[in-house]
Amino acid sequence: METLVARHSQFFSGIVPRSFASVAQGRRHARYVSRVRTKATSARSSLGNFAAVRQGFIDSVGNTPLIRLNKVSQATGCEIYGKAEFLNPGGSVKDRAALYIIKDAEERGLLRPGGVIVEGTAGNTGIGLALVANAKGYKTVIVIPDTQSQEKKDMLRIAGATLIEVPAVPYKNLNNYVKYSGRLAESIAKTHPGGAIWGNQFDNTANRKAHYETTGPEIWAQTGGKVDGFVCAIGTGGTLAGVGQYLKEKNPAVRIGMADPMGAAMYSYYATGVLQSSGSSISEGIGQGRVTANLQGWGVPTREGGSVDFWCQVSDEEALPLIYDLLKEEGLCMGGSTGINIGGAVKLAQELGPGHTIVTVLCDLGTRYQGKIFNVDFLKSKGLPYPQWMEAGYCELDVPTVFEEQPV
Image (cartoon, rainbow, N blue to C red; front, side):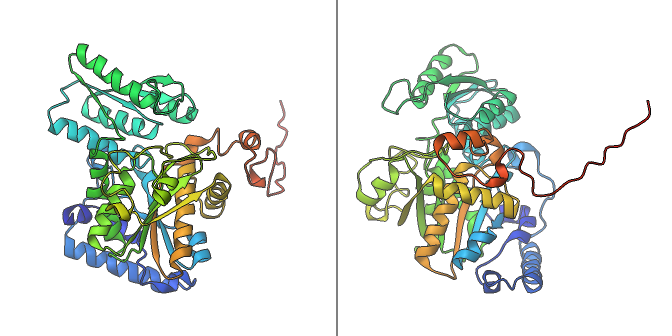
């Protein structure tokens, strides 16, 4: 871990440890910058020189900075940071799982040169797998529900994946995209000379291992061990369980929280032990209806021996304004799952009270959902809120016309 941190300690300049109480009170500029730079210099001198150049796609995955989320930090009196996973080379937190799934298959001798990786995914894991596969000389076949955003489908095709769209049906249906991808992997493996593997991100614990070995240690190092809580939504459960395990092992007092969109069954499971869902959400890539293998163990409630000791629901009506404010006031264009995550971080901050440090995940860019969360007609059709500045023709400035006629 020391080598990993040393190699990328240039990101230390973006760290805001909890002890800088003046930040939460608005008195942060000169003293804060000076102290952080001192810490960064100290870290570099004690851990050695870091490499300024990454060696290709694979070496660029992970070691993303923490970004202070100013508005929600000021509103809650806590330091709320977002792990900037959209800065991974494939553009999302799923790059970590994708890399570890492929590495695990290689280490177990399941992938041969030119082999095929098959996966059922809502998009981002498929994008990560396709790009890691390109860097390593493999091919990818991605099975995706036809309800997912066109932007993610387009990116998968750009990345060279063979894309199979299937109807969005419940997991119990044999043609659910996850089950379909498993059967497809078996079929391709019988005939392809390089063989084929099924990524199986939901139940392949290489996913959880990625976050236990990288995301968790990074958060601990970047906060100087002064982290009071971590919150994220559940897609596969890999991030929640992996980070939760690492942070709880470092400090059992760290709160590990789960934020669930409406329409998912996990809030009910954590609260009552029963998988039950109600409502709906336009968020993609999160919202689970079963306890995956990645969740088993550290990803279950503390009453069952796991790490999760806080849970909440976040509606689209709560999440969307957070996304729009983050873009308009802080310059960060994030996707829907990030809104759920930030909503969960705010609710944990409200429970803990002022003066605590909470980390969540900025999963991916909002440009992958432009046709939904930044589409006024779509939002109107769902009865969801949107800001005035998204209306067609809206302009904050009175911009003059300066076109001049030119002689023919």
